[in-house]
Image (tube, rainbow, N blue to C red):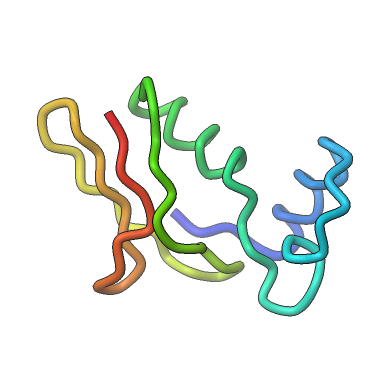
Length: 81
């Protein structure tokens, strides 16, 4: 999955998040936006965010049994169950 700058800005506008890390150069994906996408697919009970996801990054999802690991390239960005 990939999030665009426009999707990130729409989400942070909807939740009234003024944090500049989501609104300025590199546009870090809001954790709740990523969580929402994962929860809708995998019904996760928890998620640990380990590294940021930036606008345009391709997040690859590996789901084994009840564990989900998300990576961008070789970097693990989050894990959940």
